[in-house]
Amino acid sequence: MKLSDTKATLSFSNGKPSMDLPVYSGSVGPDVIDIRKLYGQTGLFTYDPGFMSTAACQSSITYIDGDKGELLYRGYPIEQLAVNCDFMDICYLILNGDLPDGEQKKDFDNQVTRHTMVNEQMHFFLRGFRRDAHPMAVLTGLVGGLSAFYHDSTDITNPMHRHISAIRLIAKMPTLVAMAYKYSIGQPYVYPQNNLSYTGNFLRMMFANPCEEYVVNPVVEKALDRIFILHADHEQNASTSTVRLCGSSGTNPFAAIAAGVACLWGPAHGGANEACLNMLEEIQANGGMAKVGEFMEQVKDKNSGVRLMGFGHRVYKNYDPRAKLMQQTCKEVLASLGLESDPLFKLAMELERIALEDPYFVERKLYPNVDFYSGIVQRAIGIPTALFTAIFSLARTVGWIAQWNEMLSDPEYKIGRPRQIYSGESSRQYKKK
Ligand code: ACO
Image 1: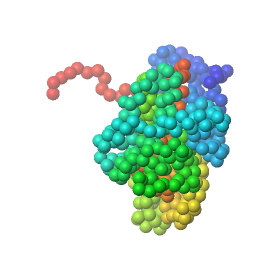
Image 2: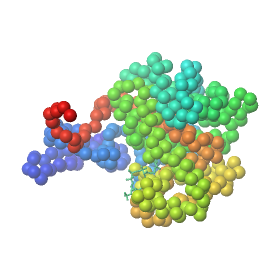
Image 3: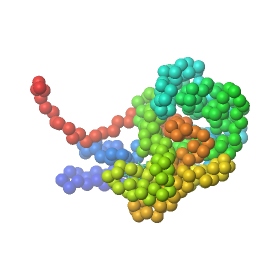
Image 4: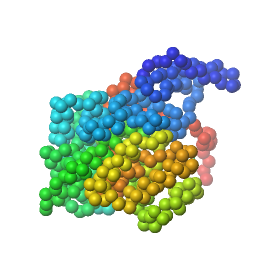
């Protein structure tokens, strides 16, 4: 970031001396006012719940222009990456800053492929869970548990340790997600197979069984790979900020990523894809298309507590570019699987059509987000609803680990420690009650 010639001046109406604050510019996007010395010089904090106006770090990984509906990974528009790259290209790009050439890609693929197995003890760890446990509960435990197995790569001051942890996490997440699924349905775990692509291998670990050969469907493989690409990173969202805050204490990467998984689970964040599909299924069960209007009235009624899941975003105030790409994938997958007349897809299109014309949504700039269509795609390829957020975690792992690594490499890195405005009792004396 670059120091700008402009300065911000903070003045007070009570006669306190005013204070000049430096302003910094990034490469694109809004400038920031540097308030680091504010408390030292004025004894005041700033108040910004939900980080509505606060940049908590500098980052060169992902850029979003919410008004334009633009998403860039390392400067490349998501629309170009989604059609020209596979998920391994994206992982390399996000971790290293640029796309790989042929040799770099081969080497990276090889590194990830050689780390997909997990320690056999993980099987016993899984057995401690109920079979009907939510996959996100299981995944939070399993990812945190990895730190008990990989002591050789938890020196966070060593860049090589950080690199090998990144590779391990990216490589092992599909194995863990598939194991959590197989455990939930009582089937044997399927070991990774090195001659398959990252995504093809995940599909096989999910859907193969020892009784018959599993052949990866290339349309399904491409669709899931696109889901992974679209979810790979999204700058300082809640789970990424959680990973950074958790990691800022110096904890190991597996513990920090487990915190990200836990945060992602919430329905306002990654849990929205599961909540969105449940919503569509509920509308369908209660009368389908005929009830869409009634449902939309409920959504607009603040007292109903009902939200249109998969709609709205803290940053995008124009169409989420990932939703456009997801809608296109959705059409392709349904057509190739002969499910063009899927009633949930029709329902989703109708909800979107109504919302885009309704003043409630238009005035609040509420558009479909990536989760609006990703659930329909996942359901069409046989992934159970409860696993959607676990798949999101798998894809977001590269973003989390790259952001964690970037934080640790930043000379300005400090333990994260927000301030508060205290509104409880002031000091009082103990009296026995
Ligand atoms: N349905 C109905 N009304 C909505 C919705 C929605 N999905 N989203 C926002 N609104 C309304 C709010 O009620 C509020 O109205 P008001 O100004 O009259 O009070 C206004 O739009 C602004 O909404 P906020 O909740 O204040 O916006 P915020 O930026 O805090 O929230 C969020 C963003 C959490 C994503 C919200 O839009 C939401 O809950 N969406 C549904 C859940 C969802 O799809 N989450 C996935 C996000 S993408 C991701 O994590 C991958």
